[in-house]
Length: 258
Image (cartoon, rainbow, N blue to C red; front, side, top):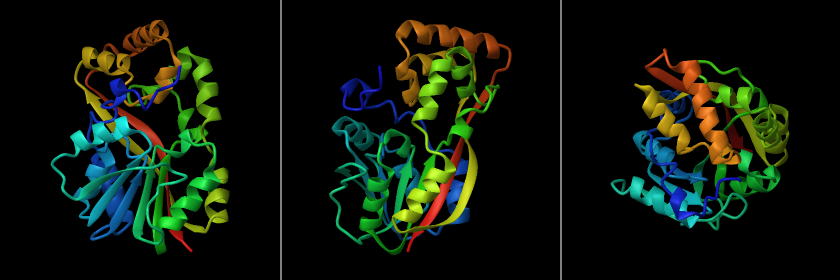
């Protein structure tokens, strides 16, 4: 089974954490967002829409194709007056052309079959010289071994079938470069980011997070029984290592509209 982003039971699954300071610092070091109008496409639960407000943007338009995700995001961001919500998708945002300074697409493109249509739409809504930020995992990022920080690696140790699924939905750095350049972007910088996902103070909190599949779409490929076996496998690996700082390896592309 795959995650159903339109199921009301899943509308809060991407709202349960804050963006890590490492992400915020990377943005500060790499791109000037002060006073900018930003679109967060595939906003999920609004975690990074909130983080963008800390970078003193003018306004964030949070876009998602799921009404349930937008409901969760609206609850998560209810105290942020500079965030608005809009139903649309990466191919058809339904936003005005040449209007925005920056587009963020974080953890989005691995859900898409058509990079070209996605980047063409980002190009359309950006102003001249507007910036596009893509954050996702390449196959190389996904295949890093499991350890006390990179818990995701253990998923593939126990279930190699997940490795095949994960690689199949990821784009290589070469594929990303070709698609971006083909649809009017110049890549200015590519960065590897080890972003802290969560700190677990005890085994029970880690087990609960995994069993709920919180923010982990790949775990929806497992049955409940398989997931319980995975949690036991990881628990045995990590039971003597708490607290644990879980981190994920990402590739971040910063591109400018030509």
